[in-house]
Length: 391
Ligand SMILES: *Cc1c(COP(=O)(O)O)cnc(C)c1O
Image (cartoon, rainbow, N blue to C red; front, side):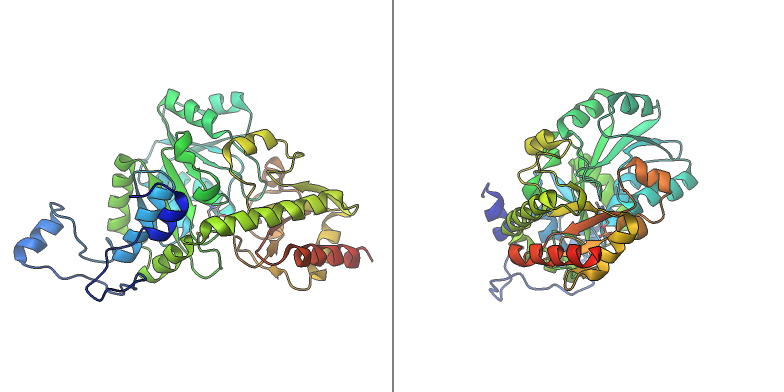
């Protein structure tokens, strides 16, 4: 009916019930009634659309998926209980033993574990390539390569992959391209418009935006989604109606939240860049980012995540974190509250030191997810902790 992001995010809604509710109600029901024996048979046979059981579908999860698919400009999608269930199933559903994956080296910690420790048990091989090194990507592809998995910007290094280039690379070799779009959300970047086949989300982050629930989704090409839906329905990593409801409501404010997260993050990054106690700062929309031009090409704004290294090594970094008065020291990101973490000792602790260094996770790197508090308070908090930790 509409074709504006903001309007779709607010107005896509499950059909009203006879109660004439304005806001979507919570459909806390494990199963649904059939009108007749014939109706039951037809729904089970998938000749007729209809809810039968909430492991398969539910009005709340369907509303969320219809909204996300439209916002990502994709054909269809599958909801999942977590971002990692989405990451795992986006690949698992399309692979068989003997297949091979090519992935960017710079990935979320748990995604590394899935690739290195879980798929290897089923004779699915993985090769990694460095962002921007075209020769490595070409050499990584084998005759049995089935899909390419990437994250852009990456967590936490904020490296950026050229979506137009990687899509063309995959099309030419008949490989399925999967993109984790968690850091951007569809408001800032739409990988499918550049040619990605599947887009993966952790709903836990900016889509929720208030750090309340765990959720995930895979959006993309209808033929691939059909395979993923089959596996999801049979094995049961289903999203709860409650969590789907929370996230669908949150999407109503996604555009204005992402604008503000990005505005605050850019201001903080600019402040850090000028500060004498800072060794390095990285933010996609800072002209000093090595892929600034690319970020500008494929992202609407820079997003909410800034990374930096405080002068004085890991020890100083720890003192800095302990000197913070009100930033939340927590592993989550994409919250209205500013959250801060030290990736090398938390989210990416299970990687080897060399693996971390290879993807830009320096020992002293700090990742901040800039919240929606007043920017003057955010800057003052960082400034006092830098001064305090110098003593
Ligand atoms: C958090 C995160 C995930 C995993 O999502 P969960 O909801 O925690 O399971 C996947 N990819 C990225 C980039 C993330 O930041």
